[in-house]
Amino acid sequence: MAAPGKCLLVTGPPGVGKTTLIMRVLHKLRTSASNPNPKIQGFYTSEVRRGGERVGFQVFTLHGRQQGPLASSATSGAETLIWPAVGRYKVDVASFESLVLPELQINEDTDLFIIDEVGKMELFSPSFFPAVLKVLESNLPILASIPIPKHGQDIREVARLRNHPRATIFTLDTNNRDAVTEEIYVTLANLLHKR
Image (cartoon, rainbow, N blue to C red):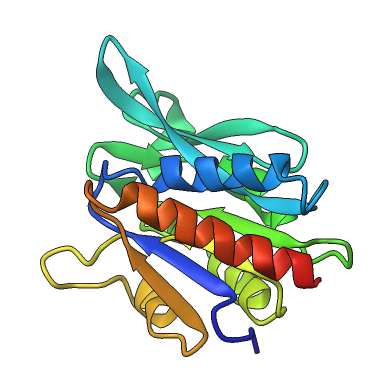
């Protein structure tokens, strides 16, 4: 089982800055003199915008800096007809899995996993959540983002993470972003220093 506090989960409403927080913490960890060259695996997602309008999401890996589509509102072709949908976005499960699943493999030299995010689109992959659970049980530090429950309803897998006895939840809002970023950075820096 993961040690208490080693699974840090950031939640909050869409657009509050969960991915931005993760990227700021990642930058601080990578440039810290006290923890030189930490081995960090995982991924983050980013919006794709055209003309000021969001048209999809991209996945970026941390190990190898590869990228590919997660979901798009501008899909075409016969194969996209069977892709699952979240609102107007079609989810490219095969692309997501090809990028993310290798990043969630546990290696003996890994210091930290970053998972942005465990949400509805990502959970269309049947292999994704089992890989997340293996990481959770690896006793390695994890920084992950999860969506806030919508209309009081939590996604089953997200609720399982949120209620995990080893998880620490940080609820982000516009007033506490800097303080939460610093608290998570300090917590992770301490965990990495002890490895």
